[in-house]
Length: 218
Ligand code: URA
Image: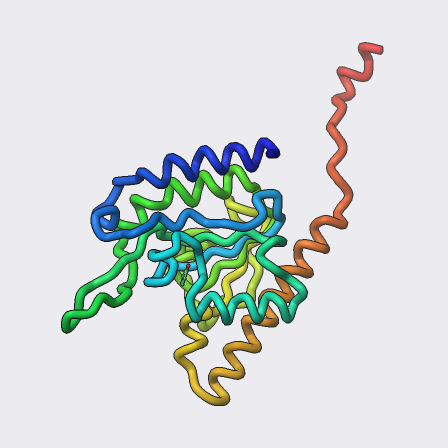
């Protein structure tokens, strides 16, 4: 196990016992995140749904299947990347006797943020792709406007570059031409993220700076 893998594993163990917000009372599993901890590319979604809550794995429902398809169209599998969410536990509401997903509350996001922050501190990705506005609000900037700002590169304190793409669950709610356009935009954004990683990896590594004073020592 690499040091990064070990640190992430330790963090996961701690997260599994998290009781920082009330979602711990209704969750089945903490969905910490998974994939390649040594990756340059991290994808961040909103939070677990029913399937993720049941399995403890991110993006395994219908949205996850769509995500896997569009990743594969770019030659990417889950072994190449790391996937996690803003919220590690499912945010749900009971409506007419059935349990439905609901948007995360500000207090829940704040309570969960330290986990994401530590994940990114350990992985140190070159590029983060935010799937949907909640991740973009945290990683890129507050009041992120998906319609205006998706597909644009931003610098971020969590990665060299971050960009937001449409959330696969949003894409699944579109029909006909709107669905095809939204899906194509996610394919294009993942392609852009892949290319950004390649571009950044090609950059020459910074040489350690040697101060003129030090030179004079020799
Ligand atoms: N939607 C998300 O944002 N994350 C998941 O893990 C699943 C669905």
